[in-house]
Length: 494
Ligand code: NAD
Picture 1: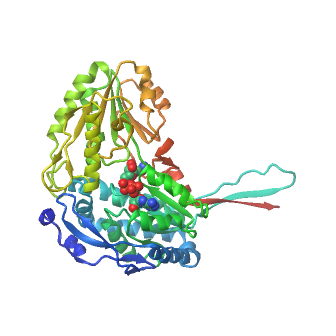
Picture 2: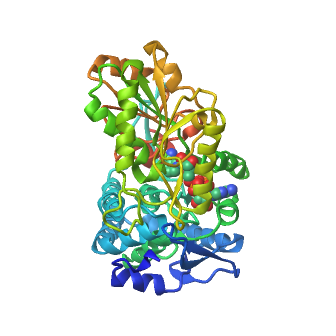
Picture 3: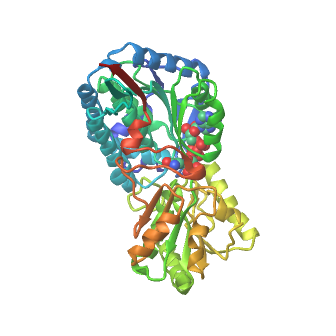
């Protein structure tokens, strides 16, 4: 039982409170009796129980969001006021950083150092970034090419009531990456966090009330994807769904959105390549490739899960990676010395081990890791697999765990084709000293983000999203906020 490791008083108090749904500015019970146990991934113990919201709860939340959008001061509130509110939410999270970090680690399993240094500070920065956008949304004044005199302008108006559906790998960051631009644009929202990791979203709801965001502007319904998530996606009074999750569920939302043709942005899966060219600085590229796959136990949409290495460096790179994998200290996320935590759930652990088993069965060689760790919790060793071929499941499919497949490449002209040889197109990394070659290769790779001599980098101002089956649309930056608006053209004859 790892709950006892240095948990702050505030975190304990939060865990001891009953959890409810946030609807119309108040905490309320679900209309049904179903609940979900929240597991500590480090030992499988139950740390909380949350409501499993149902269709009736979603109906109530959407109605509240609609009323808030149509009538409450939110939609007419000055942009400056909205900016202050977003900033205030960021301040309130900052004042409770320790608690948010502990909740995130307890819920997801990730190392506490990561929650403290990445997830929570980044969430605060994301909200502050979007606070700035409230006062910067603008249209244009296009010329009108007709006889007579006209003045035309375009207006960016909030898209309306938005459903935000988020995954479990970066729970708070994913929630605020959607909440920030939605609120900055003047939308009202219903947030459905991942059922495995809803605790920081619930705590965020408390902070939102404390920041005096008007009732109904933000509603939070916890629950299963197939129940609460599906009801939100299908709801005819929801104007847009902003979804981050698996490609399979993303595809199902296309059908769900059909009823009222709601807008859809989809941030989906990936199988991102890391490429080490012959002239790469191996002292940087090898740890870079390891970090790209092992960060957050590989549960990262942009994880560099396929590594392509110039033939002449293959053995050296494998040797370097195996040494790094052996140094990873696995342990409960709350232990400050832990470098790699458990996977989020027993289901995820089984899924990852099944993929490793399939690689072995198909004749690949597991040269590091490949096994579960300990007799409690959902740990999997950092795993490196060689002697793969492009048809194997471990090369084609997203595993979402600490599993790297490594391929030696003789003919460098084949690199772009190899990099593009999956259904995904989220991200890619190229390691080389030759910037000209790097750019030429970057242009050929069909991915939303390409990094050169670095693992994947993201930020609220950097457009993020996928080519191919990695998604529809972009989050972050100008494109990110525009996706929460409708564009209206107003033309006046003068
Ligand atoms: P998932 O698709 O199972 O679940 C994501 C969210 O969708 C959860 O909130 C879930 O409850 C909800 N959901 C599930 N079924 C639903 C349905 N039928 N209707 C509506 N909502 C439903 O994904 P996951 O396993 O939680 O997350 C891992 C996946 O997310 C990976 O594929 C990963 O690549 C992807 N991901 C992508 C990004 C990105 O930005 N591209 C970021 C993080 C994770």
